Image (cartoon, rainbow, N blue to C red; front, top):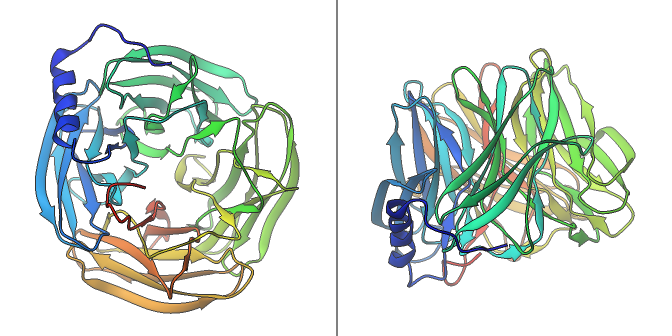
Length: 465
C-alpha cells in the first residue's frame, strides 16, 4: 500500500521529480526495470519514434538511489532512433531508464570492447503506477556461482512499502524482505544457491493495493558481476483469463542446449494446463498436461541435435485459460546456466492492431539478426517483416504468407562493429498481433545472445500504450 514516509534522499527525490515535472505536458513518464552495469560495459537507453510526426524526447538514466546519471533531450524524426550511453568504473551498478513518450524502448548492456549485447530490459511501465494486486514473475534458473537479484523501482511520487519474495518451484519462500522506498529509489533482494540449477521466481506483495512498479529478477555471475539473463514480465495474481491458447515468440536453441517451458500457478486453486513446445513448422516436439498446485511451477523441456532450431511455447487448457507468468528458457546442458528466454505470451486467436515496431537492439560482425513471427490464427496470414536501422533505413524486408501455427522470419548480417536495428511488422490492415521477436545470435555457434519481444503500435497521442 502507498504510505508517506520521511525522505531518505532529498537530492535523489529532486532529480526524479525533475523528470516528472519536465514531462507534465505528457500523460506519464515510462520507467524501465533495473539492470546491472559493470566496469567494461556500456549501458544504452534507446527509443524508436514509431509515430508519424517528429517528437522531442528526453532520455534519462538513474542509479538505484534515484540519482540522475545522464540525460539527453533531442528531437526524433519518425522511424529514427535516439540513444543515451553511460559507463561506470564500479564493479556493479544498478541502473534504470526513464523516457517521456511511450515509444518502443530498451536499456541494453553491451561489452565496451567487443560491442556485443549481453542483456537488456524493455518492459517500461507508466509513472505514476497503476495499483493492483500481487505481482509474480516468470521462472528463471539459478546455478551455483550465480546471484539472483530481485529489484523494484518506485515510480510513484510518494514513498512506498513493498514486500519482495524469491520463491522456488515448490512455492517455498527462499528469501523475503520488506522495503520502504522513496520516490525514484530501487529496492533489491539477493539470493544464491549451491544447487546445480534451481528454478525461482519473484513475487511483489504488500498491503493492497500494490503498485505496478517496473521490476526484474536478474541472474548474474557472482564473480564478474555481469548479468547473464533476466525476467521482467510480472503478471497480477490472481490471474486474468483468456478464451484461447497462449503462445510465446520464437526462440532458437541447438545441440548442447535445453529448452524449458515453465508456468507458475498464481491462482488460489489447482489448475490444469497443457504445455507444448512447437517448432517453426507447427510440429509439436513435446507436450504434457499437468495439474499445478497453487504457488507452484511446472515445466516441460526438449533437446535437439540440430545446430539451430526455432521453437515457441504454447499454453492451453479448458477455457478460460489463466494468463500465468510463463517463459521459454534456453540453457546450457552442461553448465545449466540460462542463456536466453522469451516471456511475452500472446492469446490465440490473435487480436488485431496496426503496424508494430520493436525497440532497438545492437548487433555486429559475426552475428545474425532474425525477426520472427508466429501465426497464431486459424487461417494463413500475409505479413511484411522489415529490419530497419537507427536512421529509419530498411536493411531487409519481405512479404510472407504464413500458414497457421508456423513461424516465418527474415534475417540480416552486418560488417559493422555494432549496428542498432529494430523490427517492423505490417500488413494490409488490420495487422494480427502475433507473438514476435528480434533475436541476435552468433553466426558460428548459432546460439541466441539477446532478443527483443515487446512490439508497439503507434498511438494517436504518442504517449499512451
